[in-house]
Length: 216
Image 1: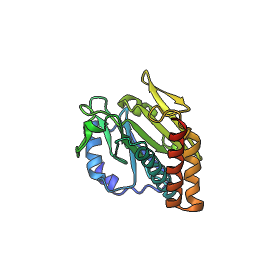
Image 2 (image 1 turned 60 degrees about the vertical axis):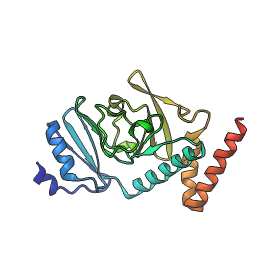
Image 3 (image 1 turned 90 degrees about the vertical axis):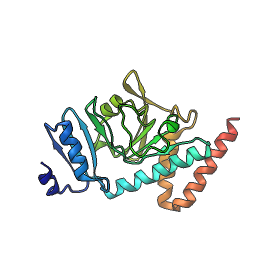
Image 4 (image 1 turned 90 degrees about the horizontal axis):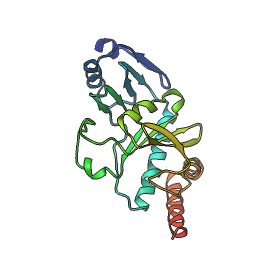
């Protein structure tokens, strides 16, 4: 199988499904694929999905991730971003690579760790998925216990909160209550294309500061 994967070329925006993949084979494939790659994986029910994102997908991921980081910096919230780290739980036989992810309330528990094992370490507090029409794996995130999932598709941001092992759509993020992020994040992402990244980030930080003043 590994030899076949080395010969495999996945066009951007496309994916392949490999069925009847054991956990050991899954681990071997991850090692063979390496960490320096653009493809994303998802594994559940002995089925492995390998997806190659489009170039614009990466741009959206970076911009939204930067906005989220700026938000937490302005709110003075300690966080740790692990980008597209592979999260897996051997006991659950599940694995996923989000487009981006953040440890927030559990940041101190994983601070300084180079390798995470979800059989003993907590899952990310917030995961981000871009262009979810080709890649929807809410069941894996729910099984791993990721408390909040952001899904950005077709210019819209949806926030889902884990309740009783199921995701419920929410207008507000429990990490950032009372901030209309489903409206604001897409707006400022679009601004990057017209006024540039740096000017957009400055404007966004000013908006956050104004919101904090208004809430006092």
